Amino acid sequence: MSVPDTARWLDGNAAGGLLVELLGADVTGAPRTCGSCGQTHAVASHRLYQGAGLVLRCPGCDAAALVVTVTDSGRVVRMLGAWTLRLPTG
Amino acid sequence: MERAAVLGRLTWTVATVAERVEETAQAVTIALDVPGWPGHVAGQHVDLRLTAEDGYQAQRSYSIASAPEDDGLALTIERLEDGEVSPFLTQEVRPGDELELRGPIGGHFVWRSTDGGPLMLVGGGSGLVPLMAMLRHRAHSGAVDVPAHLLLSARTWDDVLYRDELAEQAAVHGLEAHYALTRAQPPGWEGFARRVDGDMLRAVGPPPEAAPRVFVCGPTGFVERAADALVALGHRPAAIRAERFGATG
Image (cartoon, rainbow over all chains, first blue to last red; front, side):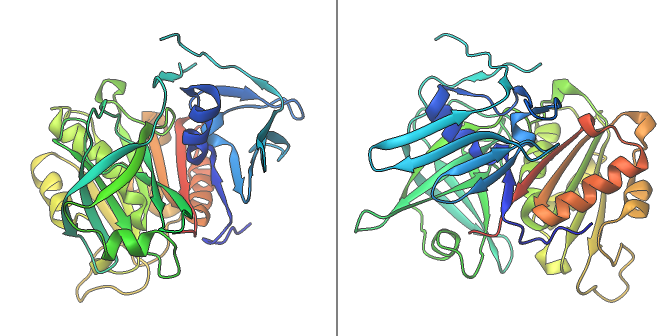
């Protein structure tokens, strides 16, 4: 199996800034359990595909975990699977 | 389970370029003064945003090169010739210029000296940058009793970032530094002369039984190959943390 250095996906680390925008906290270290394959991986270990919006996919089965679509009036955010987020107050 | 870090509101801040250092023909370190910088953890990144006169914006993530203990915030940026942002940052930016920045960001690809070791750091090209932040943190926080092994893959010897500093860390702070030069090697080269593979990772150690904390950073393909080889050697997938960077600069 060979993945070229120019592969177009990154990992969830790169979505950290956007996730803070959306959720108010840095959740890249948080675990997410996939609703499709049942594996649990840190958000940072997911695969990030970026275009006009972005799609974060499970590294185990490629099922979508987060879909952010940019529209004229704002962003549409869909989160799939079980996200365990600890969002501190303050 | 890791807690999410409190950032308050992550807002864009205007940072001022304090210094610019040419690291290699392709890479520049930019030291920034950031008002109210909250501090960071080695391995984290920041987002930079550039705005053109017509309002067009481009945003990129860059790893922090400096240790939390260091004064100021340093980013090392590699120029990608057909990039949209990195040519500007590496060639045009001068001390006194202002850049929009937000961060620090990241709670996964991070190492604190209190996490312990041994550390096994595997970098491809400018993937060395966040690993260097960890090595600087190890040295500057007095945690040099944590064993540290670095395997760095670069095209040529002149492409190796922070060469002198790594040599000093090896001499003074017990860093075990190994290099793989994939394209050309200087006369008398005694390091590796091929792409990173399982035999190489076994040779630079530490072995899986030592339960090292493994950090791999580089282009996506490099990270995939290295991580697959580490798992094949018996390292636990959960002990391997990876950060990939892409082809957009």
